[in-house]
Image (cartoon, rainbow, N blue to C red; front, top):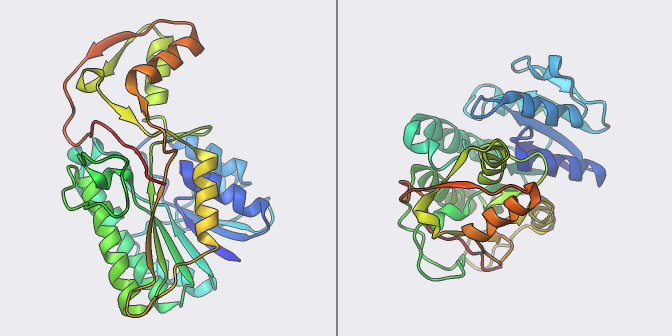
Length: 307
């Protein structure tokens, strides 16, 4: 299949692109390579996919990889002029939209970035899928849509009408927009609710890297909600495996219902923040200095995927 992966220089997008290429698919990757975190990590991921840094840094420049069947284009999803041209050039079978402005806490500081990428950009993806007869659109949602849901584990049947961060609200909006396009235009769509992804090439703003860096340097770590938190940590290979299974099995339209699906992709085995910190301490052989703080705005005490 010929597959468009947006956010190809990101953590999940990089691993998915690599796996799809190894399985013999043709992949076109796009990414705007923004500076939400160190762009050198994004360039390093692209180099691992065969894209030299000097070509990846050219805005809107097509760059052919040294790996067979991979092409990279630097582009914003909200680019309403050039995104349709990309769809016109390539007859994509499937689109996997992993590009988004990430980060719950950052959404409080810079809300405009979330509207541009996660709402305007996603609408552009939907419009391109509509006009180019895409066989299946998969898109990144998030476990954050469950908010402060008290019922565990979190099920896709649960109400998610009360997001507590703008990031979560944009992801819930994506699910609603996808359902509308599935209903109106018969586009099979799958929303991927990811649960706390970790692994090689991970985002440096995630707790694992922030904690490990601070502990190794003898600096205190910030422990929110006074440590009363848990997360359903999910390894990157399991995330990619889940995406690939769903990618090959688009939802079907049943009677009058849209060809629309939501799926949790998680470990189903949450770990407490205390155990998480102890595991890092054991690996580093260093005891953490802890600064206990109240819950941050937009954060949730627990996540747990019903898979």
